[in-house]
Image (cartoon, rainbow, N blue to C red; front, side, top):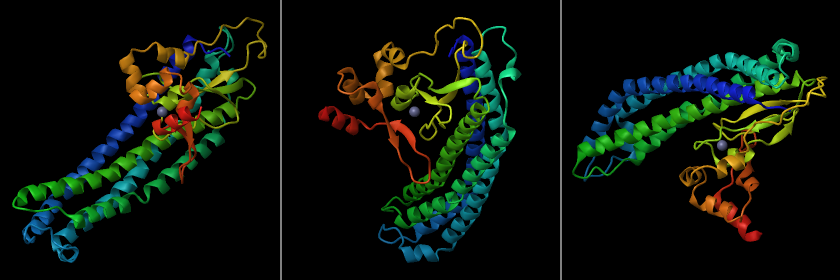
Length: 352
Ligand SMILES: [Zn+2]
């Protein structure tokens, strides 16, 4: 059990490598939705101009009028096709990254294991076996999830656009303003579909990486004793992940069960050197302690991470460090650990 400087460097490298892959996919998805919107925006401009013109007494046309409006129907039909294509392309784009991502995860896990061996120990290959079939199963499972999660995206976005259209806006005596407000709202619903797609992409890619790391750990039971939850200790990291950082788990346990879009890593911790047959004293783990790191941050950073109320409860000792995280159950998804809401912390503080 010796997370050392090399291990820490590898963890940083691994994080950068995942981020680069995920960010690239996110950029591509944003570009695809942007292009698609530009292609349908003209139809919407025409359709909305028609509806504004059809309004009487400054009131948005009725549901029936909208249903009969040719251009609005056309805009919706064109958008439906566009959304269907986007959703299909989305699945392909994300799934394409899963195999390299899983392979990378296994390689990083191997390097993380090897980094904890005494200097001069045999090379990486001696400690690490990769179970190719397990990795393929990880990819298969993740691909299935991405495809099934993507399926309702286009219908949801279409329904949201339709209901925005029917709800309408007060036209009043400024028709041009009404038309542009409506265009923005409709675009917002279109982009809502994109935002859901981005959450799915980030979440499933990161989870596939962790699942591959899990598979790699199982293949190396002889060397690895347990795994450790490692967060990036910075301002972007939420209270839950700060609290989880450094906690250890049996090898057989999957995880980290991070919240959606969470970036925490599964880091293998090897057996002691003596257990592995090296007759050498082992240096202590250099993994930074989350609480000590947090206490050393400037107050502005502490507030940015926790928020004022939560930080106050923590500093006053009304809640403990471990109280910051809570298990959350989400239908259609695995359980996850997320920040315990401040109101729950207040209840906890009052109860004690
Ligand atoms: Zn978090």
